[in-house]
Image 1 (tube, rainbow, N blue to C red):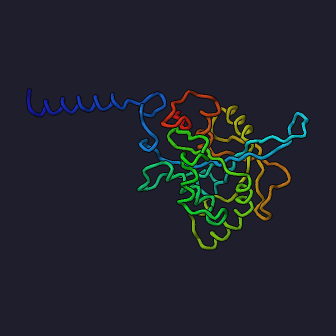
Image 2: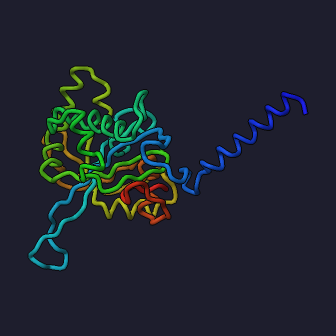
Length: 252
């Protein structure tokens, strides 16, 4: 056998062996892969909180009801749709938590709303801190992270004034979102489960008024960004998933 042919067959053998060792599962993630090692293109944070609401059964006691905080895209092809605080991975970011923290800090203008630095934001959403309820991995990585109602209310009341300050400073990375709204978790689940496609999915929400920093009196219909629908669909529909190093990490 000629020397070049031997080299070719050896390369083919090594390639096949390497692929077999890292063969993707049905989830598209190689078995044994840990969160820092996955190839991710984008990451973000979906803030959730629990508001105390009257018990619908008539009891005087109140019960916690889960809500998600969404933000509206101010530009791009999905302008006007509501999403988590998320974006594309940037050079030098080796772990999804870095991308997710940066996007949350910038788009949520946390420096001027909650008074947080970017390192503080990263520490808060990191799984070891105990605030993140779930990490959904489906090509992109979504941190579903719990915030206190106090922080959510403070965030909503200060968002628009912080946004105007950033607009004045012409810092585009802080003005990617122009509205925020809260949505009941169960309503979000219902509309996504019943949607045939990822586009055009609508849900009732309480949009924070940009002039008062409070909820508008009546709920209004908002449209979800397609990528958010895709990120949440597997979780809401109960699709099979694999867990990562932590049972809170779900690979779809």
